[in-house]
Amino acid sequence: MQQAGELRHNLTPAEIKLWQYLRKIQLGNARFRRQHAIGRYVVDFCAPANKMIIEVDGSQHLDQQEYDAERTAYLESQGYRVIRFWNNEVMNDIEGVIKAIEMVLSEK
Picture 1: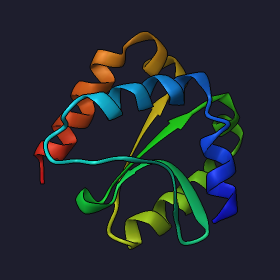
Picture 2 (picture 1 turned 90 degrees about the vertical axis):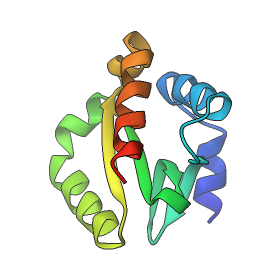
Picture 3 (picture 1 turned 45 degrees about the vertical axis):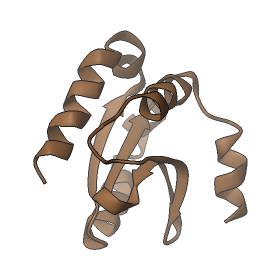
Picture 4 (picture 1 turned 120 degrees about the horizontal axis):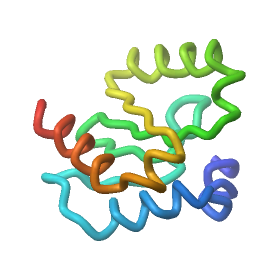
C-alpha cells in the first residue's frame, strides 16, 4: 500500500521516539513494523506474529472517536489486540509506555 510507505517517512515526533525504542529493545519475541497496512487501515506499529497493534494518538483523535472505535473494532475482528497511547505519554513517560507494552505481550 503506497500510503503506508508515505506515512513511514512522515512519522510524528512521538512515533519516531517510540520506534527508536521498539527497534532497539527486545520485547519478548515481538518484531514490530511501522505504518503497517491491515485491510483498508494503516496502523502505527504492528507485531504481526503477536497480533498486537500500537497506536500513538494526537489531539486530533479527540474529534474522531467514532472513527477510532470503528477502526479498532475491525482490527480486533481480525484477531489483533490494539493498545493506544497519547503522544504526551510517549514523549514524557517512554519507560512507562514500554512497560505497558511488555505487560500486554506477556499476557499471551
